[in-house]
Amino acid sequence: MSIEVVVPNLPESVSDATLISWHKQVGDVVNKNDHLVDLETDKVVLEVTAQEAGVLGKILKEDGAIVKAGEVLALVESQGAQVVSTPPSDIKTESTPANKASDIPLSPSVRRLVHENTLDPAAITGTGKSGRLTKTDVLEHLHKQEEPVKTTEVVITSAEPQHDVVKANGTVATPNNLRPEQRVPMTRLRAKVAERLLQAQQNAAMLTTFNEVNMQGVIDLRNQYKTRFEEKHKVKLGFMSFFVKASIEALKRFPAINASIDGNDIIYHGYYDLGIAVSTPRGLIVPVLHDADQLDFAGIERSIASYGEKARSSTLAYDDLKGGTFTITNGGVFGSMLSTPILNPPQCAILGMHAIKERAVVENGQIVIRPIMYLALSYDHRLVDGREAVQFLVTIKECLEAPAHLLLNI
Image (cartoon, rainbow, N blue to C red):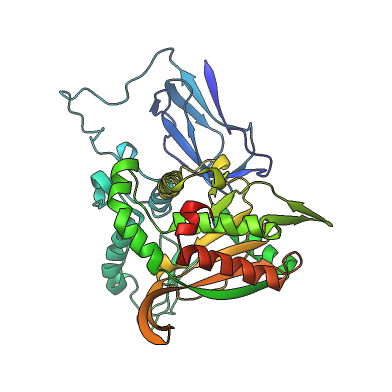
């Protein structure tokens, strides 16, 4: 009996998906819940698994195909029982090595890089947790492969015309290999990010206001309690939870910044769903802390840690990315000193954090050294006035410089 492997249901906002790569080939034995194929949407990578055991009989959609919910991807010929695809340990076969590529667990981003460059994962040394391959491992392996190629790739004689050479990985090498280029298709996520950023610049009257905050109070409080906090809650106490709490306090005072524009209407949200921008190998994504005002410091830190792990392993679900009334982005983790973050439509404001640096400041007529961070608030001037934007940022500054405000709710 043939069992159809179909595209799972997609959210209303996602019309189709791109088939990235198959992990089984025609004739391969398939167990129930085996990972068969990856589908990339505008937001996440979906892993399609086998519903029953059998043998992969026919592949109907090849790599790169655009598919919609319900479309049939392949047919699995059922054998009516669970099939064990690996031979017993006491039987040795030359055709089934123990470390074949399909047995090595790979994240979607690593898997795609391996597939695009026709690499054998077993030949690459992994430096990740438990020896897993990381994207850096694969890129370094590619770089080492290219080094010897440069001297033997093209042989030119004076009697022959010079032509460019296209490598297997898409790199175009000139005869002297001085100006290589590589053309690759834009990922769905990167294309979506580009579309939304362009939309924000075209459709919003975007301005940015800046301020600086003395982080000494937060640093002292964190240093004093971080060990006890981690022992009790089993999660580290970071800076982001302080910024989330300060942002919620400021949003309560200035509800227009928690609002959005829908045509000629303004929607004032009576809840606080805060997006936390996360950079991943596939691009920028913004998982959302739903009802963030209901979370304590430990709850915020657990949610952020969970989202970070899911983002790195490309296992975020649609519900993790849905909604959002305000966004926080932290360029400081990459060393950014000052920037103007771009709005995340349909939200009307976004807070940018930056690197903490010791600077000379004047306090009570004395020059002292303090850990200072620059803050940036980009906002849609159609909805938010400059006075509200400035006071919003001042509120965040006050909450962070006297973090007792956050703890005592004053």
